[in-house]
Length: 330
Ligand code: MEV
Image (spheres, rainbow, N blue to C red):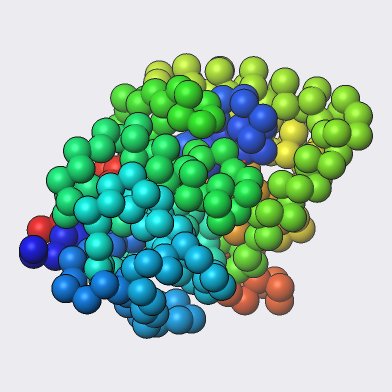
């Protein structure tokens, strides 16, 4: 069989992070930086990974042992996906998968979900299993839960369906928002967020009293207005709603000094509004701007990064939004 290469995009959360974990709606967009997975059926009964960009560039084990024993974190999503795929489609045997990425796993663009989706797409083609997008999502989502235990699956939905999605977990609602590109500027703080610990802290506070539920109700209502504003391409209103969403995230105490500095810099440079994107605590912030102000906002963010000692690895990331979902390459 000839090798099959598939790719899937990274994502940015536009509205509704954290609340989405508890069944509230969210809005996510796929970005045009992708992860690639090339799958090749091999005669040997082995599962091998070649991933030059991760700590463990080469890895191999018997197909019979896939999913068992100690699995290095850097290959865990691929291996657990293959275990689940084989449980469903036992004709899948020896396989070699080679991955490459157009973005750093530190950005918070959802590299784990994107690589899982790209591998699933390649396997679907390689073994002609005719999975629908929903079936592919279910397989990948179970894999993500195997590895992480938590997660709303919004990043997987972006990786599989692409575009800009109104999403309710676990892909209970996946609605494509039919728009052109969103005028976004992205600033990376240079600090890797610890998503699991932030999600767990929010969970503990939610169980402790009604405050978090009150915040999530407001986020949910705001997402509905944001959906209408995005569909109307009313970027000024979208920006204002981002600022409101950020205020609610600050009440949840998931923002960070670095995110706040970049958000303030975007506002000062004339953005319509800005917020963190993802779990908080680091990773990226996003700002919505008028197209004519985009460069000013980028310069404002870059200059804020350059004067902060804590943001040495920070940068403005140039991406296009509303990118295509998982696809076969070549
Ligand atoms: C993290 O990128 C976004 C969260 O809402 C978690 C999730 O949705 O899985 C905090």
